[in-house]
Amino acid sequence: MSHELLFAVQKHWASRLHYDFRLELGGVMKSWAVPKGPSLDPHDKRMAIEVDDHALAYADFEGEIPPDQYGAGRVLLWDRGSWCPIGNPRQDYARGHLAFELRGHKLQGRWALVRIKNPDGRRRAWLLIKQADEFARPAAEFSVVDAWPDSVKSLVEPVA
Image 1: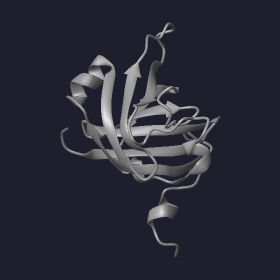
Image 2: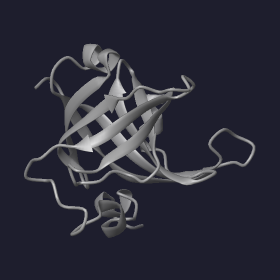
Image 3: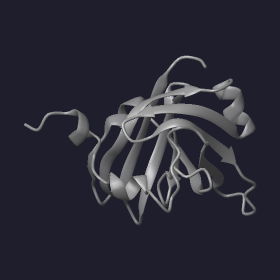
């Protein structure tokens, strides 16, 4: 394992509800829109559409994006923490198979993002997959997005 980097997951009510999965890499937040949100079940392969990179400062954003701006809608900081690449993250990202460990409040353990062939060539499709480890849980028994729907800020910051 190499050094720890920032990760964040934002629950985003834009045209449709989705989860923005973000990993710090190369001075930006590489970003994927995950329509169903992450799953702790290694059998679930969640579609993750790669979207534009975001500034590192955006990883902590929670609030409302105005109607006239890209991504308009409510954004909730669903999870955050650090991630450790397993391997060389820049080479693995370019190759389309990024393995890593998450250390968040809701998401932990080993994960992978795997790029899949995209027949239309317009958007870059990946799969977000939880690896079998001590943090994995069968979907029939537990849904992380249903069990913990609220902002991670409510877990780690005192209420004023």
